[in-house]
Image (cartoon, rainbow, N blue to C red; front, side, top):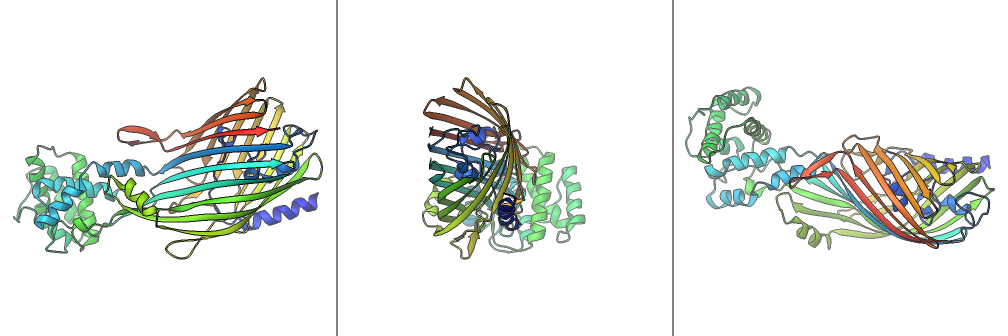
Length: 485
């Protein structure tokens, strides 16, 4: 048995330098915070730990007694918002890019009344960085087992919305490519000085800290901005002052570029949606130790689609573009898992998924590697009605968000009442990053003898504001119907 364990670990561990993000599949797993590698005893074992198949049909292993057949159908979805990207885009859409763009393109120069909106718009765009993202995650499955064998269909999707900023084409005059020249002469008059003392101080700061700005250029720019604000009765606040400096800095860095009506800022949607069909087998050496594995046919579509950052109707554009902006390919995958039981109280589990690094074609050329994943867990069942569990990713896992890793710690518990009602609670946290922070989970299961209905939900304690509403930075939901006997 030690030899088998050594061989299994030697297959799993070396391939795990970097891995793909682990998805929580199934409502029972989600309700327990994703702590499921050493807990799973249903048809989703093909995903969580195929070694569980080795214990099915046994008569002396708690939670697996006489389980000869199982069938489960489930679906789940969720999102995660990184670095408040949703709120940042919401702030951008508060200003009408089309009005500013048409103003520049029709007259060749931005009008004075739109200058303040332009400053606020550029300021909000400049707040976005390459690490901001919104990630959409989906899964669905039909999984079955007969004794120690299983077959199923799992659909997994992970699509990220990533901003690509154009801070070069921000000019407000079509007759020149010098960005600073366009900003200093909006009203056609030069040699001006703002009357507001805070703007006078800002002009001096711009000239002192931004080498491509002279004091006279800064005074002209801020005098025009002051006129725009005064004409509309808008007070000069610290936020306006900060925004004006940000625009001056962006212009200083860009130096030259096309006018803002030709700005190319956009959102890139990219990621993989794939279906895998695992053929599963598990073998128990005795009532304490089992191993299992999957050989999987896999078919996936890798999507790369773009929409304008300023388009508040970009949902329609996205779905129209997605019909064509993908590449479809097929491959296969290999998973391995092991479970070790210490009596009927403690279970240890380890699983490695996609150990052969399946590859999918990308529409822009090249390949997307579905890197191996590994996860370990422990489950403690001190009483037949209580299960306590914890899982951890064994590596920092790569994601499709720029410079963002995932390494989750999961903790969960399940209480069964009268064999009819199961109540679950859990928690998970990405140890590699801090923007999402703590995610809390809850779930319940209703057992109607031969079939069971389960539901689970997860939500972060950190929130972001979109359309005036506070939303969790991460939220997921799962439901499933299963038959076990």
